[in-house]
Image (tube, rainbow, N blue to C red; front, side, top):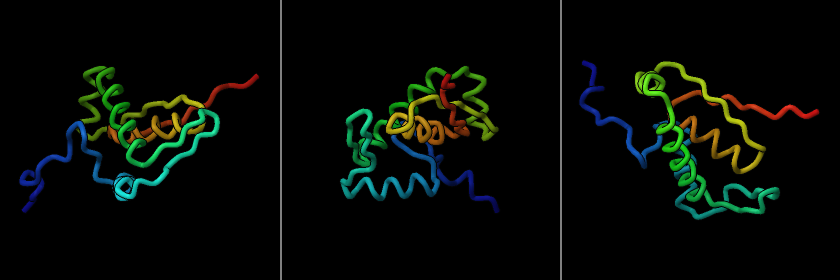
Length: 113
């Protein structure tokens, strides 16, 4: 018997996907430790701050998606979203937000001439 319909969906504004990376990040968030020190931006963020920023960016991305793309993600189909950000905190938040959305994150870099 498939019990999937009996389990509540793992979705919501403050809910991360049930995956190992987010499980580990959530465990560390309870310890109030620094997750990232970005020297370029001059910021130091805890795991809780990182996850909060990931949730906020995920909401921004989701609200800007074409409804057909959002439906494809909801249906579990492959959707690729590019992340263009300088390395550091912004990049980490971008990559995690796309993963938290349920899409595949594609890191993109600037062309340097």
